[in-house]
Length: 337
Image (tube, rainbow, N blue to C red; front, side, top):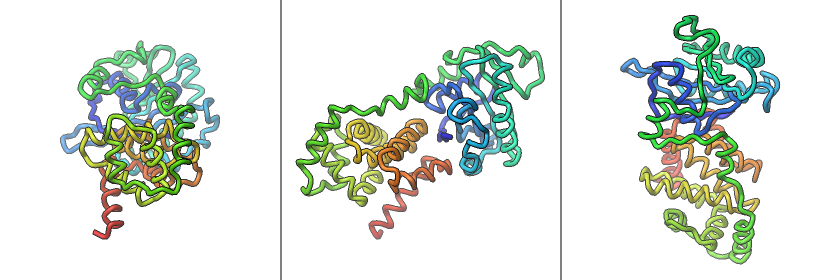
């Protein structure tokens, strides 16, 4: 399961609009996925998308419905405060009938969960074989039984608006997102050499690291000193708290800095920058990159405490602004203010 924090407001004027918005919410085209778009009614009566939950289809990574971590799904949905949902199945192979039949157990399980949580299930859409159908709408004029022609990569009006106004540009799939964090073995070796040469030296302060990360380029020596300094939990925590400074340009540079560290940090040193990158991407509203960075942190150090703590925050779908508040409170307590 992956849960993606969402900041954009969308108007549910048609099933096509909902489907076109989903890749922008995820950051990538969902491929073989079941996506739950969770909505909350505003004081003006509009439905505001507050969270997107993505599950693998049956027959992909999971073959049984109960292989899904339904406890985490329920926790995320409940924490979102959603009052309604739209469910969409995206399948890359198979006819509409084949996909609907194969994924019926998963769709039924999600439908049951939405009802148990008292959410208004506004629509159930299935995208397959170059068209989409609704399992809810019975109006043949609106939703013909044979389906409505649909090209997944055609952005549609909503997709164009999100791209132009919000700068959103979904990648081809989750694999394409993950490829942005692939390691550079040559750079890793150079950094490791510097680490060995610098071990035992004086650690830089959190403010020094924040200054380095805010620069345009990052010399290997400063990278090595940063990774060594992250072994000190107090420095690491001060860095992430200082990175979420609500200065958009500085936050972006530091977010890119942490992400760059993930690609060149040697094994055993990737967990810290990957976790910081995960937090920074989550606060930016990019759940896809946040999830991938957290996976990298866990793969590097299976018992990395900060990663485990932030994983709980993500599973609870804590909104980005609340994450800022939690970090600010934690730093305030740590400094004795």
